[in-house]
Every structure is written in structure tokens, then in C-alpha cells.
Image (cartoon, rainbow, N blue to C red; front, side, top):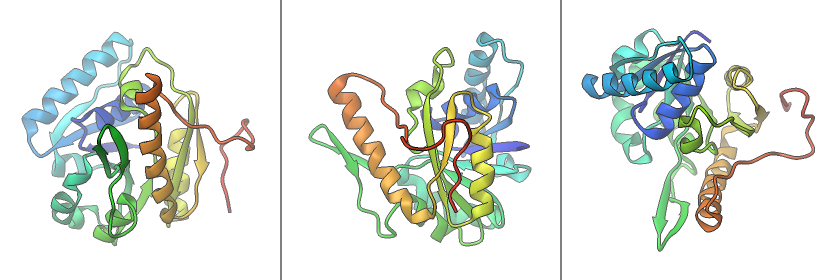
Length: 229
């Protein structure tokens, strides 16, 4: 894939995804608004990689520096930061492949649910804020806790959707590099609404059953990545 920048890479989801990508040999650059936070997160990540006997090194940068030479930009910060951060980064993200893993969730009375979003989903909002980027939605349903724990093998399907078929295919190819995960083509970006709702369901199942759940789509060929029309 080349260089991968993770904006929001200091949080658990971004850091966990960065670890797994680095473990597969990808060059990962953690981004943050503050260089010292990015550097500290990168050092924590590298400690985990060394413990896993992985020689790949994650580097820490300010967001703009992380994005500068990236072939793929991952947006992994909380939903609350979307409208404040992305307009400032939009010029730099013009024409780029952007993978967003943002879930607009709220917890009320111990129950997780999706927050009402004007555009319909976080993914559609991000594409509207980045009209000249190719936005892909994926890794919505993967647990940050499992991603960070490199001793724990991943399992399940990664549903990927985008209005840009070529960008969707590139992210699906990236998923195939992560052991035991299968990419599934989930079609157009509007389907991210369902992916975000599934995340809320999984979190509620986790809480109820004291487990860490994932998803697998039955009825598809398990021998190869599934791509729709």
C-alpha cells in the first residue's frame, strides 16, 4: 500500500489499526494535532511491536506532516471531531484515498445507539466535507480492544463500502493482508448507515454477555475476498 497515515492514531481504534497494519509490514505514520502526543503514541506502539518480534517501526507526526507523503489516510478520531478538523485538512486530502472508521455513537442509560446524523452516517458526512477525496468506510465493526492486543488473533469479516469502486477495491486488498480477516464488498457509501448501527449492536452485546463480538457474513465463499458488482 505504501505509507499509511492515521489521523487520530493516538486513540485506541487508530492505534490498534496502526499496530495491525504495521505487523503486516505496512509503513504507518501516526498523526495528532500535537507532535508530542503522536510521538508518545508511536513509542507505545513500537514497544508492543517489539514484544511481538516485529521490526516494523511506527512514526509519530503532526497531522499535516503525517498526511503529506501518505498513500492512504485513515480517519480514526471520535465523531465529535469530524466537523471541526476535516475542513482544515480538506485541501491536503484533495484527490486522496481516505479510509474512515468513525462511528457516531452515544450511550444513554447504559445502551449504545447511533447518534442522528444529518447526512445519514458519519461516512456520508465525511465524504460531503471532503468532496474531492475518495472516501471508503471500513473496519467499523472491529473491536479496538482486540486490535491493540497483538497476542489475540483477529477473526471475522470487514465490510467495506464507498461510492468509488477503485478505492473500495484498494481497501479490500489491504484487508486481505491482515491474517484471518476477510473483506466483503458492501457497496455504496449509503450502506455505512447499517455498518454504524451494527457497531452499536455489537457494543450492547459485549456489555450484556461480557464478550468481544465481531461479525461474519454467511453464504459467501470463504476461500476468497468477496466483491460485488
